[in-house]
Length: 311
Image (cartoon, rainbow, N blue to C red; front, side, top):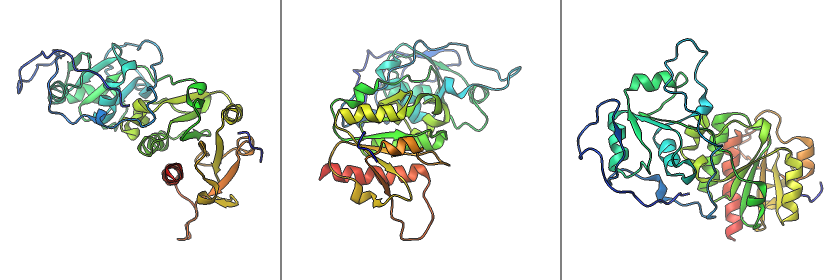
């Protein structure tokens, strides 16, 4: 093998809107700011990197009734309390998108000073259900907004420090969302995905990530092998997870800037990408089970890599 290798702080605006304890009727908007709601912005991205920017202006098409169409496009939506609150806190989202909430959730956003300049439309649960794919657990909050675009590879490459995660054609939104969540939890610098073989960071993926996609930078690249070559030039070392790897994960990792390369759910890391890794490592499983789900394997690898970085 070759050796090629947010928190989005905002100042609260002026208080306004309906008084505490008062429900806004459907069609009215809460736009003020009051305290008292759990704010996920309290945890920071330790790298201090800026969050993902938005992919242009949001595409406003109104609340879908669900009639006369195959179904809503989940890439147009973020839903669920934590994903929506994280999206509202992302500076790249300011002034973009359409926020809808039940009366109770709208008041919680108002009381918690979490609107960050966004206007909220108060609707009922049935309206939200019609807007989203069947079975979507929206918890009374829906944000209709364009998917995140990401940052350039160079922004993640420099300076070379800490841990990056590269996903080689992972397509399951639940797995990708869970990996974003683990990457943020263990202090990774960012996530790299292939442009044409990765789901949009919205919908079910954003729900599984519990807001991590809004706070952890990601880069979309055309060619992962060339991306590894570029990163190697900046001092990064790539370790690919492979069940047949000669080294264990503990043996392969050290305190150098590291890219953890995760293969797809079915095929693992592709040959050319594996050839650009400095090492292929396996996770020892003394219990004798054949393998782990890719998102679980990523969590184990991120934990081990964060220990090595600390050492």
